[in-house]
Amino acid sequence: MPKNQLTIDQLRAGAAKPLFAVAGATELAVDYARDYATEAQKSAQARLASIGKVERDPKALQAQARTLVGARIDQLTKEAKDAQAKFEARIAEVQKDAKAYPGRFQGQLAEALAELTATYADLAGRGEKFVAAIRKDGVKAVTAVKQAPSSSTVVRREKARAASTTTKKAPAKKSAAKKTTAKKGTASS
Image 1: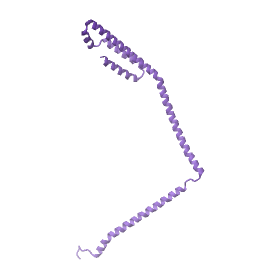
Image 2 (image 1 turned 90 degrees about the horizontal axis):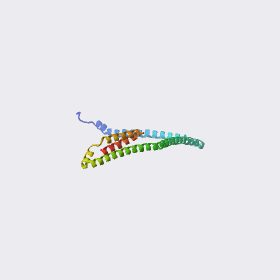
Image 3 (image 1 turned 180 degrees about the vertical axis):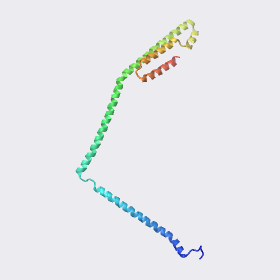
């Protein structure tokens, strides 16, 4: 027999292989189905057993409910006390700030008045010099006065700044005073 020729036995074996594969797959599917059914049955039995453990006695159920409700009431009471303590602390803080406000306001008012007084004196001095210069030299004096501020103006500004820093009580006021003196310095120059 030549090597390349197939025998009838070989043909039968080759043709039967796909059928055997289908039979093997079917057997595997049945095996998986049995395992699944067994697991489902065990799960159902466990659920039934846990249902059997449920308390059916009204007094026991009432005791369980009281325990759960009591625990929740205790938790809510604690949360309410914490909220009340936080609220009272915030109220005390607001009252403290409200009591301190008149003093802060008075300090800011004194600072503003000192600055206003210094600015008023500065402007009055400038105006006096300006009018005197106009009376003396006329229009030529106007250009001379605009070019350079007098030394007394600089001295007054420094005195006003020193007075405003000594009356300050809080750091927040320093930044406000610096802004106002900086604005005054740029506006009068």
